Length: 266
Image (cartoon, rainbow, N blue to C red):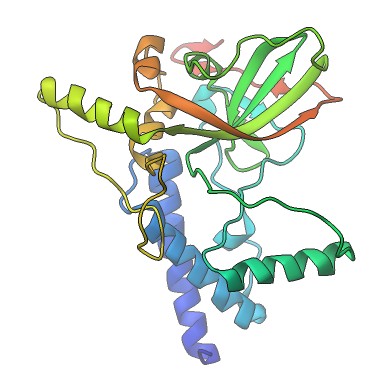
């Protein structure tokens, strides 16, 4: 265990570094490090704060979900916080998660499912009267960016649902680019004389990448937040897909703020 003074200095340095990378990724759409490297920094900070809880402060990067949404896109208020999914990298971490869950719920008789984490762009899709009405990013967990028009170009996202669907419900998931789509996109870029998109490591432990997806959150999902949004046909050509992990009825309306444009708001 690190000594208190050494831990305090390292915690402050990690917070500064992580906040810098949050700004580069969430606001500028220009990440400087891979997601695996970012996860390493965050995991080290979480561990130090757990070992030295007196240094935990409300403004620590570990106490928030993401960064504030870019107002120019139009802001969507999430009816329930859209939190970041957790992950584990070993049997010991899975057991620690299970132990925390048992302690918090007081229940040892629950079932759970483990699956590969597709770490793309977290989105929330709202359907009203069978129609897709709103698509938003996670943002800071409470308020996200309205990217509805871009999401409508993804063919795996239905624009309408069957008649027996709830009158108002939300779907949450991750937008990602498959390995096949990634390779095809690089082939197109080669033919057009554009630089290739680099592959990023998937696993913090440097294991083999997941069999079906390539970790491209900072490479190809960032442009979905470009202002002004790219033409719909460009987004669709990138062969993005959606992996869902949650669906439930809504009892409140989704609030969508105005889109800021030069000379006024829409």
